[in-house]
Length: 334
Length: 294
Image (cartoon, rainbow over the protein chains, first blue to last red):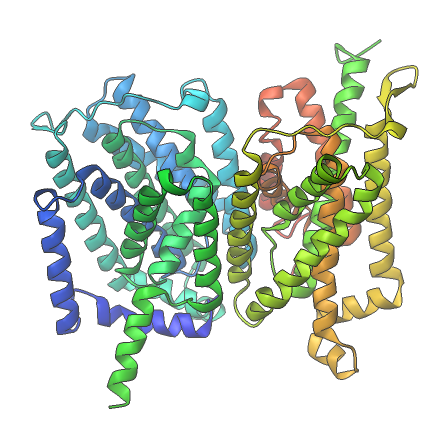
């Protein structure tokens, strides 16, 4: 199943243009500038807790984009993996007294495990059914989070301490924690670029463009899809675990379907199948929510919904996708 | 008298509640299936349309003193009109591209509708009284049957069967089925397909609104009531397969009953039982119970 022709061709063409490995000079400069800003963020007055939160959701969106953008699979229940990992880390660190790095590792494992189980079931259906199945299975995990004895029900898990990373780095200071989150984010980002450019990633793109053809070339498409799914949910789990450490709590919001929708929006708004798009989308949506939440009350949902509708109807390439398309138009018609 | 160690009154009561829920599943999955068949859009906003139906009943009574029976007719018209606007202005732009975008668009629309109603009515639930005619209960000997619940089950069964009749047994329905198979050819025979598509979406929306009015007296009316339900209905649709109309009615009612039974024997699992069944069905028969393999 491939997304619209215009999106997928743009997505395919977008890869070299915005990739830091072998991209254009403008792209290199842009990446350098972004990295500088991220490194300097705590010292130039950007609120570190906001930056950390946005980076966690950026990790989440990048993981999601591996599926929708590069494999053409719409998982409509990705909050389940972020949420379950957030709870796992929260409980292990707070109640069982695990160290933060082990707690995060366990969260990644939980995300991967749920991804393996749900992915194995969901890839039995294609296209729109895949989306419905992943949404329904995620709702099941949500109910488990609501009812299980160790999740704290409606209150969630509160007061999770950040602790010391490897027993050395005290993360209770926001600046130290920020650099840990930034390091994790950069690692995930480079990992995704590596995956997409690997032979495995090329097969994923082949599946996105033309699944029957990939099958006829002899690829075991189901296994590729499942592996991509598990990779994505494991990284979504990583995002959830980091988020728990940063904010010190895990709640039902982390596993709710509205977050599953928001991650779709982040990716779509920034640019499906681009590397920078989901990051930009995550910062935009989280920033918007942070800025508007005490100002407009329930209208925030109306605003998010409206952005969704505009993106789908008129702006399917997203910000980065449009930029790339504009650059290519300029090149071809001098 | 007891069944499996459970008083028969409680047992039958839960089964009836399950049947009531099943009626809503059936009506909503029917609308989803009809819309998906012709438009190729998985309508996430179906839950929001159902919610709007319930609010038409509530606002009608609260602000304008309109009784239940009037709003039962009014709600599908109002919500159907909303459906017409949505289809004409937004959905029709998406027919030629991947159906995923239809799902995402209607998701955005559901967020907008919920946000507006939350702003107006808050998140706490509103009560709607049972209409006078259907107050009270009938003693069946083994159980006391609340009249309104019996009405919900019978009314939605009648509506579902009527829909089935229209689609499978009338000329209009044959156009509809032909349009599902090959819209270009139907258009070539001189049938106004875009009009038919618009009316189909409006009819699906109206069906959801009727379900909302029927539900109003038995549930708490909240802005979020639709989205919580629609995810279960998605699972119902996956279990049944979207191929057959009678299939979606049977699946809806059956799953409602199963949910009711689970409430009797293992209440903790009642909110997830439908999803578990979905997982099992996908493993055994991926196309769904009544779906056709491609």
